[in-house]
Image (tube, rainbow, N blue to C red; front, side):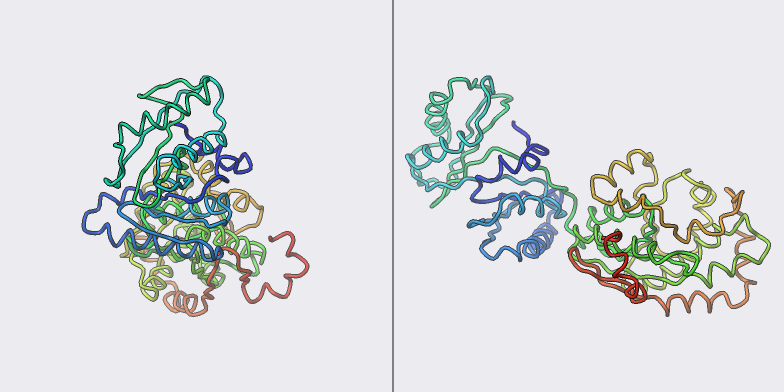
Length: 428
């Protein structure tokens, strides 16, 4: 069967623009029994948000599907937006005909002329009579539709087992739907159906990919970013705002919590344990994120850690760092290769932002030889004897600034506004 996962949109929408309707199919959550109805309603709600800028669109839902009647709205734009909705497995652009034989044959011919298959293309018609009042059965319709199409396109070759082009004709009362392509969606579970988690979002490559992967599994995420002004620049913080904006394209909107981390981070620099600074810093981040999670009603923390990638991501380090919180730690990338993570970051649109050379707090005060095998007893003792440690963490939580980031907004941290005019082109 013909697959236009890349072809359909890149060629000026050539194979999509003909559509009267888009047929959206649900993903793996269809197997979830009693929860299926709740998941379907969630997807429908997200689709309604996506189509709000298109006033002529009409939506209809049935078992396992959503129909998007375009009524003149741009099909290519709609496909590009809808294929990023979690829970949608595939999209088919559809031509709509009246459920009368002559009309079905006429629309099928027009449809094939738009697709313009090359000579030698293998071909099949697969009809399905949903409306039992239609006078011709499914098998009969296969022949009735295919015969004139083959006569008009003598270069087509019939292949009923594995055709390159399979025209589906779905006959319903009132209208018949004719389509070929399946454009891949991102699938997964509808956003938010598996709960909420806090994402530790740095300015690097890994954490945005971890956030996207979590959302694809049905998690609503709120982002937590730690900045150490004046050691880190305002551009570094704005970079994280922009990364969150990219993720919000898949969610409609995401909260970003900006945590001032300077006082906490510098508290670790004078204790004579430089090789443990990264471990102490990451444990502090988890403690702060846990307090924010409790405040926001989140039940887990998501990180971009990948086993063995850096000193803090060895198994002994992950063990000691993870004990700083009682919440579940979700690490979607833990067994992924770096090249695979990079490829996924390019696919979801975060890579170009992630490689911008703006430092973040994780690159500050990094010792020459950070430990890869920290001792939990020593770490606990340091934290217990650090003056005012709990108060420092509480103050960071109290001073956290929260933004609601949307795909097309212009949200900026309040103390960046003063330099916005001179740097806006670089940021956006």
